[in-house]
Length: 343
Length: 81
Image (cartoon, rainbow over all chains, first blue to last red; front, side, top):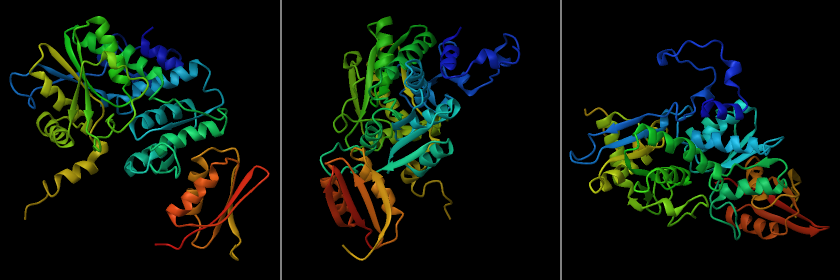
C-alpha cells in the first residue's frame, strides 16, 4: 500500500472503501474520491520544474519543487497531515479540540483537514495577517482569534498568538485542547524526511547537489536535509534567512525570533541572508519571466539559489512553498501605479 | 465606584494569562462607551495584568478586589476616539 494511502487512512479516511471501481493503470484515467488522496508521496510527488530565464546562462541547473500544487495550497499540507496523523495515532485527539498559533498556511491546511475529520479548530493569529487569510480560515470552519503581539501587558513573551494558544491549552488543564505545535513537533520533520526528501532524491535520480529552503519552523530544512545527507553526505543544505524586521511571510529571522526546537543545525552547511527588496524583485521576475505565480518566500529562495549557484556543480533544488494569490496586497504596494492605464 | 451598573460579566476562573486579558479585550469591544464589564479571575498575576491593560488601553479600572482566592475587576469602557 502506498504511503499516502496509509496516511489518508490515519486521517480517518479509507480510500479502498470509497473507491467505486478502478479505471485501469493509465495515469490519464487516474481519478480521486477524496481530497486527502491528493496529499503528495514518493509515488505521486509535487512537480520539480526547471527555471532558466531568471538565472545567468552559466548557472547550475535549478529546479523548483512546486509546493503550491498541494491540495490546500502550500508545503504546509504535508506538515498538517503528519501533525494530525501523529496526534490521532497517539490517541491525543480523542474528545479534544485543536488550537494552533499560525499566520497562514499551516492554519489553512489544518483547517481543511480538521473539517474533514470533524474536529473543532481554533487558530490564534497575529492581528496584522491580511483579512483574506482570516476569512478563509473561518470559511473552512475554523474559529479565528486575532491576537495583538503585545497582548500580555506584563512580563510575557513577545508573540501574543503563541502565548494565547498556550494559555488556552494550559487553562483547560490539557483536557479540552491539544496544540499540534509545528515548531516543536518532530512529526513536522518526519513529514519532510518521509515525503519531500525522498521525492527530491527520486525525481533527481540522486543527482541533487544542493537543497535550498527557508528558515521558518525548520521542518523542511531539518527533514529534507537529514534525508538527503543520509543518501549522499556531499549534498549541500542551504538555509535562507531574512533580515530582522523583514516582510517575507513564512520566513523567520533568528536574529529576532527564537529558534524552533526541531531545527537541527548539523544538517545545514550554509546560511544565506536575503533582503526584502531582491526577494520581491525575484518574485516579480518569476511571475513575469517564468509564468510562476509564487509567493515572496519563493523569490527569496531563488535569489539565494542564484547567489550560491555559481559555486556549485550539479543540480540545485529549491522549495517553492506557496503561490502568489495570497499576496496580491503586498504586490500592489510594490507596483504603485505600474500596469494601470497611462492616459 | 460610579453609578453605572455592570453591563456584562466574564468568568475567567482557572484561566492563565493572557487568556483573561484576551477575553476582556474582546468583551469590552462589544460594549458601548461608559458601560462596565466585570471580570472574575483566579490567577494572582491578573492584578498586575489588568492594571497594565487599563493603563495601555485607556479603559478605566473602577475596581480591583481580592477575596477568597478570587480577583474581581470592573472596567468602564472608554469614550470612543
